Amino acid sequence: MIAYCCRTLVTMEGSPIDNGAFVVDGARFVRTGSASDILRTHSGEVIDLGEVVVLPGLINAHCHLDYTLMRGAMLPSRSFSRWVSRINALKRSLTDNDYLLATQLGFEELRKSGVTTVLNIVATPQVFPLLPPARIRAWNFLELIDVRPRPWIEEHAFGSWLFFSDQFKQLGGVGLSPHAPYTASAKLYEVALECARAFDMPITTHAAESSEEYAMFAKASGELYDFLNKLGRPMTDCGSTTPLRHLIENRLINSDCIVAHLNELDDRDLEILGGTEWRNLQVVHCPKSHRFLHHKRFPLEELRERGLNISLGTDSLASNDSLDMFSEMRMAKKTYPSLTSLDVLEMATTRPARALKREGDLGKITPGCLADSIAIPFKGPVNDVFDSVIQNRGTIKWMMVNGKVLT
Ligand SMILES: [Zn+2]
View (cartoon, rainbow, N blue to C red):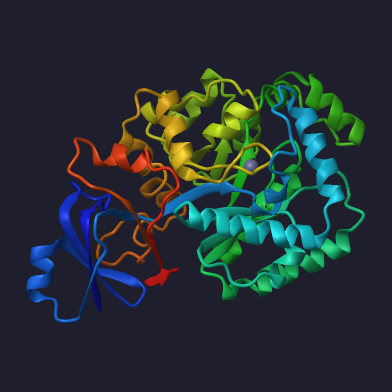
């Protein structure tokens, strides 16, 4: 057992502790408190981390690491369908080696910016077995799309089989990600739900992201409707309801599904989300990607008032310039003045842990939780430690994942 001391300890359960300490045994925290209390009875090794604030490792709740090489390749766009077709063209120009490199670089970038857990959507499962074990925890979600039959279906099926058979070398888990109601059929969502139930896997999806997606489902019109119609997508599910109600009313998602975006909701959608059945839907907001794509204002206050759990993510480098969660937290705070610094820090720690149903394992520095934590320079004392934390620009002085210090 090793005791670590620090200038300030942010546990995300109760107030920050000045001159704090925590004890790690194997992969988990076993004690937290003031250094004087802990050291009085601790007989093992003691490491003083110095003038730092230690906090739980950050959790990025929505990311696509296989697009990491797309940084700077896309211009901010007001046309969602043009952005989608540009991504598709770029995807076709990349090889499996590119995707392998992209995923490795993405994991490294996350680690350097203090992320210890990522919810990563995987469009290229065939490269996964070639990856060295990631140094951080990852829940990898296999992306499912059937907007038109894939000519390389056998290769993809083989890749998917490898993806699931090779999962055990990674810290974390696997899940499924039917991409979005405009790219995944009702049948595909149903199959995903059935598999997720059978193998106890989480599901994540995108929904109600753009005004074009809203127009496609609600009015059977708009650029995305025309684009997908030309691709040969059957459009009989369009013209009657909103993207969210398409998923909910057809029972294509569970009430605890992790849903990214939800920018385009009408009053009835909000009413449904406020009801007892759907209040547990897990929402992910990606502040910088949201700005990049010029979406309508995300209804953060309306969702919080109704008790929904909202986490933060970066989305991919096809719509962002970094995978830095500190930068996402600052953008969220700036955009929504109702949020305190503690609120936004929760959206990158305890809230995504709840979305993953891993509240007892992740997102806090408390006895029993997995020992994932980071340290950033800190002189203290200040009025608002949480604000000092989110103002951090890139310097992670120390990091621990699963009880092991990463160097
Ligand atoms: Zn996404």
